[in-house]
Length: 405
Image 1 (tube, helix red, strand yellow):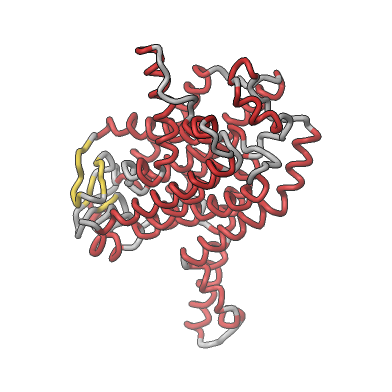
Image 2 (cartoon, rainbow, N blue to C red; image 1 turned 45 degrees about the horizontal axis):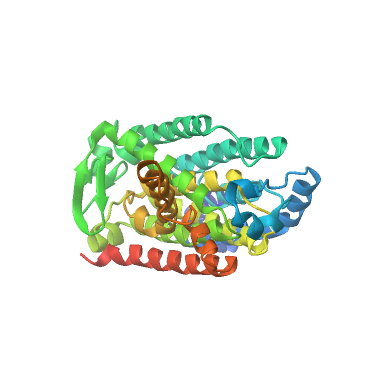
């Protein structure tokens, strides 16, 4: 909406300037602000935050009236943890609809929705959110902590991820594939790394190296899909304590908003930092700032003790959004650092399951690892805040790497 309003104003302003008569366009020259990504990104963050605060209480009341309380695993399943989390029984879940709604509305108002980077990230987030909604609905309907079967959920995650990855690979504005030589030379399609050096969308980059590490070609599609599915599940595993997942989401999305903004500016990306540059990628900062703003708004109600949970509706959607954003900025590997808490949570589950199957021994008292610290005696709020601190530090480390080499 704001970009369209700017375009309309600019045309009127140019027409008035050509005619020599000043009219409404000159009087409304403040609309020139709407062309700037910085202004629209900040506006998207604030708008998403305000939407979350405004509609949060209504969403909570509606979820309570629908009796969509979060099923808590029994003592037979989790033993001592059931005592620690017993008070959470009945807290409404599916709160992720608030995050999803705030992000999409703020993006539609403040961004250019037809921008290919915005389109793929927003659609991936919406599709993953819909899958999570189905999973949450099955849980509350059957009053069990198990929703869709793991196989069914993984199948649909892979389908969504492959569609998103294929769009990224074949869309000329993103990949350069199918674009003319003139478009690529003019910077209207594809990525560049360094002065006038186009790179293939299949090239895997890392900021410490000012050249592609490897080029996967069309095989980058399953690699991209793996990132989206992995990130979606990692955020889902992190969502086990009040405010933990959304707090880490905020720091990760803010870091990637900055990366998208830098990657969209020729001088900063090409001449100074030597990171992958695409003239259209800067717009993605608006979407990511909307996600951060919605995260702050949701945290208002999700902080300990939580009044509602995001459920798989929120966690799968957030993971899909962050995974696709990392791919779009060509900083896929950096996600392992900036989103290090999500990686740590997922690895703890993998190591725990692998160790038990191979050695019949557990590495942690319980996985994901945030439960391990709970069972060590850390209060829930202490685990949450310390993980937030680590998430912020990891985000700063990831950004600092941009200029080390």
